[in-house]
Length: 452
Image 1 (cartoon, rainbow, N blue to C red):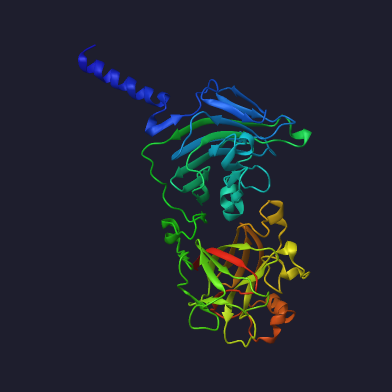
Image 2: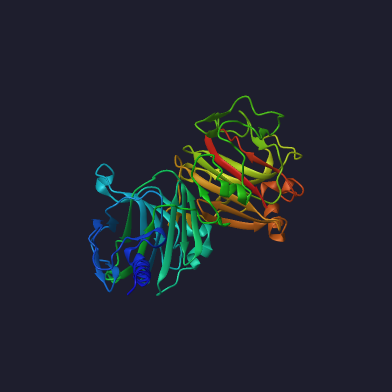
């Protein structure tokens, strides 16, 4: 063999061994296919073993959630793996997660990419295990969960770069979260606890687990809904989607009193990035008064965060028409804000997130998904008004009602409501957006709008 032949043979040998070393394209294996070296089990007592080059997790009775965690922590990374799960078995992939003695006696907590083969189909969504609960439920992007393949291998991709946390399921974008609570932590494979004896022995298989931590480039932006938990922040991706801030966290720019040319001189305050209407005597618009946007809007998508004090009542109104003669709050369609737990108002169409006095919100899904947050907790709301007049109310990621402005059903609802005395109520092409002063303290932040 001459020198040139030897060199070619050597170069070919090196190229062939690169994938086996796990450095192809910057990827490194997290699982060697033989044993659980580099992993450790925390919390529950579910069974983890290696079979046929796969990690297999099996449910057992009488134990809490179990986690097979990496011994190393990771900050920015791209993680890919494949999994096959039995029907009816809930699981998840933890990342940037922690276990410390001072937090709930070492309970694993942190971000989780959901594995949900149930009819709910929230696979790919983002849950905050043992901490804040659902951050990105599958309702925000149903196409992501629908990409799940039952009784087949599924490929998951999790991308964490800075504050941006994104997931894909079988190549389909599933979730996009922007958050800064935890910047580093371990990765783990969850076997969920089971309550029903018929679920004992169910299994989930993982294989081809690999990670990339260097020279990371964000994937191209897609058009799915973005949950941004940074206060009063607009990401570059949100701006590209057309979102604009209606409240910058510092000033009252863009707002004025409903019956004023300026912002009210009392009754409202800005503190720590939060805009609050202050408590007075519990009556409508008798302190600082309602505030409205300086611009009017037609088809739009509006979202905001809010916090209710105990017993508070308020609302966010849209298509507000200042031409109506009202001695109290200005008139418009209203997304009801109310502490239902401490309310003495029995009317169904007055509960939280309802189209006030017309359509009651269906809060059952919100409650069953443990997304119902009463007074004193931060909630997220969303109104979607499409160009065909189809309207949706959302609460904490769940759609709670929908209707069509100007339809016969809508007109019939108006006729039975207190709004019947105002001709053409709720049917204007454009109107102001209003934050109501109802005499109770209610706080607002992260107010964003996108015209459609």
